[in-house]
Every structure is written in C-alpha cells, then in structure tokens.
Image 1 (cartoon, rainbow, N blue to C red):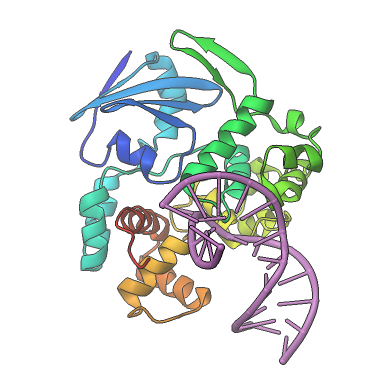
Image 2 (image 1 turned 60 degrees about the vertical axis):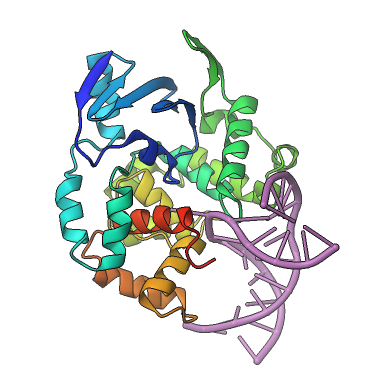
Amino acid sequence: MVEIVVDDSFLISQILECGQSFRYKHIENNIYDIIAFEKRIRINQVGKHVYMDCSNEEYNRLWVRYFDMDRDYEQIQSVLVKIDPVLKKAITEKKGLRILRQAPFEMLLTFILSQNKAIPQIKVLVERLCETYGHMVLDHYGSYYTFPTAEVLAEVSVEAWRKLKVGFRAPYLYDAIQKVVEGVIDFATIEEMDDNMARDKLMEINGVGQKVADCILLFAFGRVEVFPLDIWVRRMMTHAYFNDQMITDQIILEFADRYFKGLGGLAQQYLFYYGRDHQIGK
DNA sequence: ATCCAGGTCTGTT
DNA sequence: AACAGACATGGA
C-alpha cells in the first residue's frame, strides 16, 4: 500500500469522471478501481490522503507517470484562471482533474469507438472489447480483463467487429489495428514528432479525424497544448466566447490556440467537464 | 416516435 | 475550401 499526500489539484473522482478514462469502476464513496497496464489498482482518497493498492516500486515505475504527478497543476491553474471568468469558474469547480497518460493503442481504439456515442455507451463498448479479446486476470478483488494487444486484434475481421455492435466504426478499427501491426503507425516514432506531424500521421488511419487524433495526443502523449474540439467543447466555446453564434471549427481552433497560451488541452478538459456536467449550450 | 451522442467519410457546390 | 447526409446502435 502506497500513501501519498496531494493538494487540491488531485481528486480521484474528477480525474476519472472527467471523460478521458473509460476503464474505471466506482466502488464506494471515494474508492475507485482502475485497469491500466494490464493491472488493476484500487485507489482510495480521503481528503489530501491518497491510498493506492500497490508497492512503492510499482507506484514509481507506473503510476507517477500515469497520474502526471510531475506536472505542476496549481501553477497551470493560476495562469488559466486569470484568462477569464468562465474558465475560472470551470477550474474552481473541476480543479481536481489531471490529464492521465494512458496507453496510446488503447486511446486510439477507444476514441475511434467514441465517435457519435455517449460516454456510458463508450464504456460499454470498451468493456465488451476487453471481455471478448483481452485476457482474464485474477487478483484478490476477483477477476478483470486486460485491454487486448494489437497482435491479438489483428485477427479480428470487420464482420467480427460488427458482431460486437461497434456499428460503422468496424472498418475504422480494422484499419487502425492493421496499420499498428504493420508498423505504419508506430507510437515510439509519433512520440518524437511535433504536434502537427503526429496529428497528420494519426489521421492517415481511416476513421481518425482531427478530434480523435487530438484526443490521442492529449490523453496518451501528454500534449497539453492540443485542443480536441467535440460537441461539448463547441457548445461551451460558442456560448462563452462567440455569443452563441454559429461558427466554424477553424475559427474556434485558431481562437483557442492563441487564447489559452499553450495550455489549450488543459483548458479544454476543464471546459469540457464543466460544460458537460451543467449541460451548457444544450 | 424522433432526436442525439467526446465524429468522420463521401459526394456536391 | 465549405457543407450536407449517411453511418450503427442504444438511451432519453
């Protein structure tokens, strides 16, 4: 068991429920289970005290990076809250969220599945994917399924994907997986690219547009300057900064790029979570 | 029943 | 380059 002391920029409920993660389970009160890196970890947060059911060695090797512990969120928030009252309100309410560093392959498939789906349904699809093609692991809490590897999924046909009820996303998944096993998409290479090059590379996959690519860059590669523009962020942005006018994605993206001072991805996540929670613009 | 969901693709102007 | 429709599935 690891115990760490955190400040207000770490709240496990907000970290998990802000919409970036789909493989967690709320156990009770402030206790959550997370499945990542083929492991399951139980987290219990009581105020400033966070208890993680793992060894010190594992915490340092896996979870420090996963929870983005080396980034100074309080410093970032102090910059963002000065920008405007809307952002300040969102951050004041959602200051406990952090951008997780999740596995690139998992983010790729998860955000392909996410398109035109509500978050609870995305969770269902991801879970079905893991139960069908992942492997079962037993631990002292019971059993769980890992996120399957690209090698295993390479054998899944488009028709088999359809049977999992992924709908029109079936050929998208198929193309993404093939490109990964062929090495056309190589995450170590993408890691070294700048944002625009990395985005263009990811968008070579059929079914990956700018929004999905940007989610991968933000949630797997920690690119906190990229700004995934989805329906909720669009509503929030048009409402807060464009007087509810109809406006193109291009305008919003250009605005966000200069307005959020290189912290667009973080601003985006505070705004997304706040906007979705309060149904802003719906 | 009709609309909508952390979008993207394809075909038309 | 900008804009509509189509696309599977399930919940409200």
